[in-house]
Image (cartoon, rainbow, N blue to C red; front, side):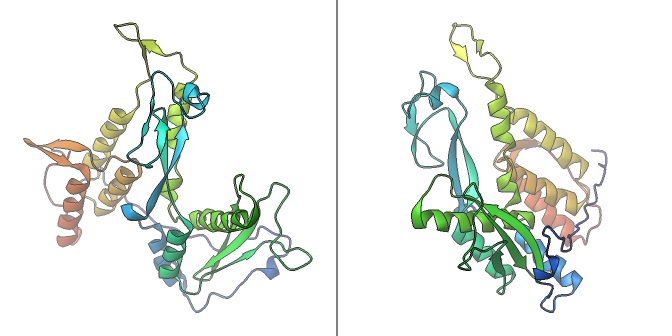
Amino acid sequence: MPNGIEALASMTAEGQTSHTQNPAARPANTFGYTRDQQIEALRKLRDPFKPAEIRYLPRMWCQNCKNSRGAGCQQHPRRKCAKCGQNMPGGHIDLRFVGHAEATNRLLNVDPFWDWEPLTVDERGLPKQDGHGGLWIRLTVCGMTRLGYGHADGKTGGDAVKEVIGDAIRNAGMRFGMALDLWTSSELEIIESCEASPEQDNADGAPQAPARPADAQLDSLKQKINAGWNNVLSCEQNLHEARRKSLHGAEVPVGEQMVRVEDLLTKRISDLKAAQGGAVEGQAA
């Protein structure tokens, strides 16, 4: 197999930026972190969450299922979903997310002194929500501060207050790269875009749902794996993408065997690191 193009990855970290009319009110103390220490610590925020830490939010993509009041349509009857664990019409997908506890645990692991504060307060000194019931906050991690926004999404009372704060912290954490892959909703956008296209009929005359692009995504990933086969950073990026797109469990041909994408890349990363970054010949997907 010919050597692929080695895609070098570089990491950048933004400094503090001003989003308010009173920048002096924002914390300027870096708490003793040097720039290199900040970058290294904040890299840990971007580590993938463990499967046990990830939850699933069902979201309808079939318009008929949306209008069925939970009963499902003829094509997508109601069933118990193995991912979200709820009885849902089949015309839905499950968006991955992490909860408030998991986000807080990650922040504590990276910086035990992390903190957040509301962007504005009311006359009583309490966090002030905007006209939509949402809350803007500043999240400070390792001496760096970025904005976030939270909303209760229809909840009321004390539960709404907790939901707003938790949502704002997760949103601000995403600005640092925390669970960024879980925020990607490209799969939902692709499926929803199919709703505008008329359904095709199969040979039996029954309506056939638009095909999902899983095969095309896997083919694209295999090309990237081949291109970055001799570069550890490229392999790590491809593994991250495979997990983000739920392709890590897919099997690809390697010689005469079928190997899971995650197993293939994990072993390759280990081999490259053992060789201290040297080019190791082998066969990719």
